[in-house]
Image 1: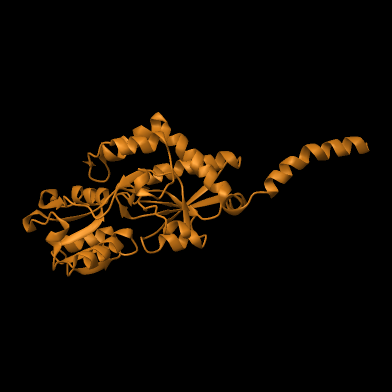
Image 2: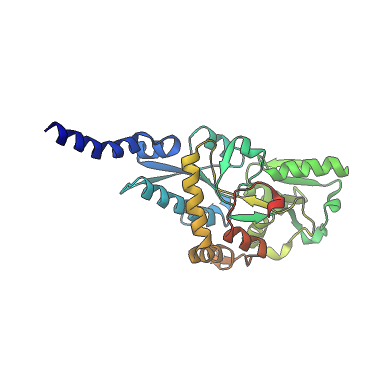
Length: 299
């Protein structure tokens, strides 16, 4: 009987040990039965709210692949997905303090931010440009001299425009906006001459505006191509490893290419607009060789 009890204990113990060794985000998810995703409200096509009040987007699709991987790893039949809206200013604090587990949006991965948070593999490359009304004929950064420009608070873009303002002695008045929609509205109402933001987000805002023919993107960028990544908490190696594995497999798959085409080369809600942004060679490289590098030179 003693030998039988010992044998049974040896069979049961590995499973118990495995459950007990869960740490960080995976432990939290297992204990609560839920995972919390931070989403944007107007970062088309990455993460936004459609006309049916549903949160959708390219980054949301990627986050759901991570959710599926977590569910499989933890052997959970059900996993509740909670959604929390975030802004450029709140997204990093909400990741850091544990309010959200993943931030699904259009967040630039850079070395400075990696001191506070971690990122999984890059899902898009963009550069910081500006949008303005065609009638104003603003194409180069120097064309903005003496103008009022807007950028979204808490972004790398507003930092870049402030730095360019000082370096080039442009004499700009820089307005911080709450979100991308508010910033674009200031240009639409002629309260700002230009909106400095990631080129893909500007393209989406123009495409969804009342009259896209009124606007143009700048010919000159404030930055080298910058990587976007899904944010997660820093120093949580098991959760990051799972997210990295899930995203890498997704990007290398046919479904990954189809998902890109769905959001960047096809009509998207709510107006059925097509952003018409084919995958360039650098993005193809990112998909075939996934990386979480924050260095623009790596791309």
